[in-house]
Length: 233
Image (tube, rainbow, N blue to C red; front, side, top):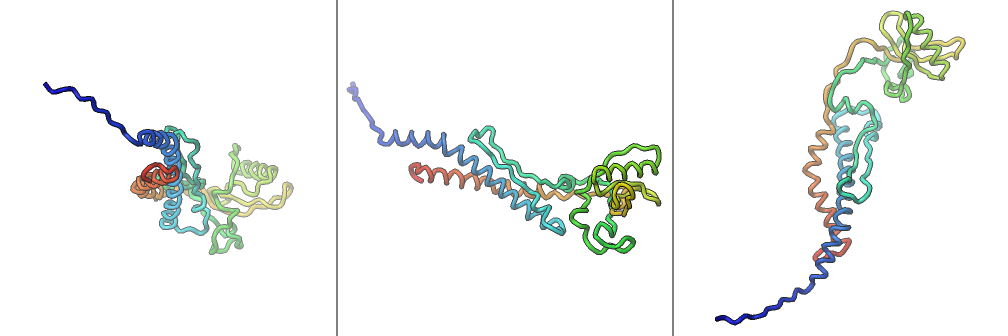
């Protein structure tokens, strides 16, 4: 009969390993996750801005600069997220396509003489996206125009939506004060609808980011392992 032998094994470094594992779970993973999420968001913004410049003819930097990031906060990985979006109201329609009312800028919107051919770009302060009008109810077109001009003058607004003498409506600039206002056509509207084709710059950006995110997470974890001097890194 084989005699029983007591065997004892001593593991060196167990305490250090447990310390590193706890540190990894408590600090390295949450910080690495937040860094990876925010790095991905800012990289997505950079990629999206590049996609916008390649896809559209831009007359200024407004659309590109409208792309903003809200960073992830806190260390709870279950509630951790960052937001990448555009402040430009027209980007959603550009992404998916759709229809929109035509608004054809006239020469006055570009600072040129009425009746001439518009050859310049629309002035920044007169872009259609920056103009607002009031909803008005009236019995006829004449009353509609009178109410619209009066409301615009009373509120200090420079633009009103009016019925045009030849049919349709237009966005008119109001000048001359409350007593003797004059109007100047900026945009002709009411000529049907434009078809806005889908230009999915955001979707193309997300497709590109899908391949980049694993590497971003890897680098974020590696950075935290080195920062906390966890064994082997």
